[in-house]
Image (cartoon, rainbow, N blue to C red):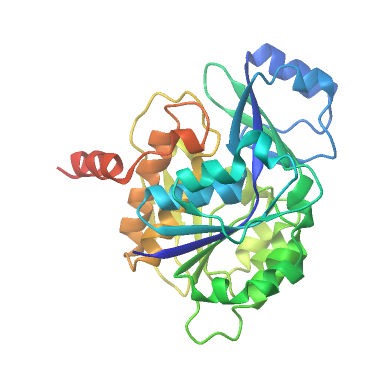
Length: 318
């Protein structure tokens, strides 16, 4: 069983399913409003937006990816921080129930991270704004304190919803390690991701199309493996060190909510790579898992189990 550590964010997701017309009105009213498939950072979410967010789920890219890795069969754990309000939402308790090790998750005097997620009610496209909360309190000192856990993983998941200095400190813990984990980096939100991508410990990066465009220069200088997620069009892979490039098709599904599909992809990919799977096979499994996750609402509640993913993958191959 692969040991997967996710060094990342924990959020309470507030979700609303709106018409394209209403989404356009919000986008016209607020210049920070994210585009389809985009994640942006904001200081606060105004009441006019929040009043449309009628459903609540547990999320955060770090937590989501840990849950997905656990569903994929990994020994998954999370490093991060929650707020004094976490009991209200049963954040830590629910992560435990979903198979994630949480003994290193710390509580700080701040609200748990907040995500405002607007989903188009017909296509499932998502627009995500995040307020850091306790995620902004994850420090380099916290990363260094858990250096042994980081080094002992088979695969380390990093995302860009934590302060960059904390992510860089976590990666610094691996720089001199003789037998370090594979590092998979999700550069969302794209703002500020280039400095983390430039760290020599990053092996695999998983941008979506919008993030790949914004990070084009940084990706050109990256010598690891680039895995571009293309939604219903599947995944494009460019291996580092002169390796091959290939494409993996996504299975056809009827999407309800695409929020977190990239997190499910990353969690499954980490579980497979951590277990020593060949890159192509790992991407195929992760692609199927991500597609299946879009057929239900939420993220963690929509993560498919490994046997379901394998069944769909076997059907495709036969």
